[in-house]
Image (tube, rainbow over all chains, first blue to last red; front, side, top):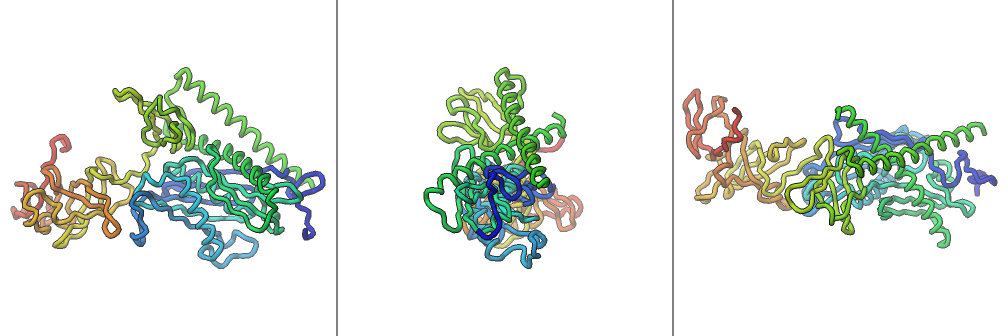
Length: 245
Length: 230
């Protein structure tokens, strides 16, 4: 390992977390009024903003339309100021296109698209500050935004990343831990039914370790679910009291 | 090192009350449900509501493994509609986006006409306004039920007319919503004459301008009396 010690002898990570500990999460729903649904989430220093429009008539080429379900259109972008070095293109590069595709797959698994044939649902996500776990922050923000928009979901989608250092799985990797170059696993689950919406792993890992890493990531997604659930319930309560019921 | 420990306690203090809170909400909700204290039970997507043997699934829910689950965040509403099983559905503060469905009566505005069809924007489904407009088409053969081959579009609709129509199909790859006005109750309800005055219907196929008394052809709808404003 190149110099930096990701897990100390006492079992703490560089930022002082335990291996299975998430970063602090703060989230808000309904941050924009002009969008059908919107949400903002902070996971540690990673900040993401998601807006949802639709379902509406298909824009662009009509040949994309599906006669039995809605199509989901995603766009992932990173603000030019989100990284240490200023980015040239906020979206459209290789990495963003891949992320866009992943988001699309994740939400096609979760949204009940068959209820809206021949229409389109737009999900736009932007990373305002990138500090590791961009995919998971985007998925979590987009879930809250979709719930806010009132689009029917099978279940929340919770996403979390995991790494593997010194025979220990680490969850919710920060930028420092990601850039150390170890294995990284991104997992999106529907936590109630424990269905996998997306799983992605880059670089190699011994087969024996995969299960422990998956278990750690799944548990982290469930912890995240508790936090998202609280945010949604608080938001519902807030909306009700403001209306005066 | 002080910073690290600070962050750690921060994370811990933020996580612990959350779990406690969730448990209390869950317990309160189930208690309220058990003694039927409050009709408002909050639910979130993916929450199991009940078995299909107890209730029928309404809007905002879906069925999996013979259980009813919520698909929206909102309030659980149980309604007994005279059938054996009550219908369980999830209500929200703001109505979710509605889409024109087959057989729905829609209110639309004519945007352009040609000899084969009239293009319209769908503005209302039933009595619910749509947030964004959907495009639809009324083909020549769907304008009226009789003498279909003698229909001339320009004698039935003009751009700007407000038309009541029924959705017959969601359309295919090339076309959008297909609408029909082939019923006495469907057709033009509001039209303006060349003088810019709203016209009055004088027969099922003619309207007259109250200022110039000029007659214009339209496929006039016989509006049901219960929909007329007093």
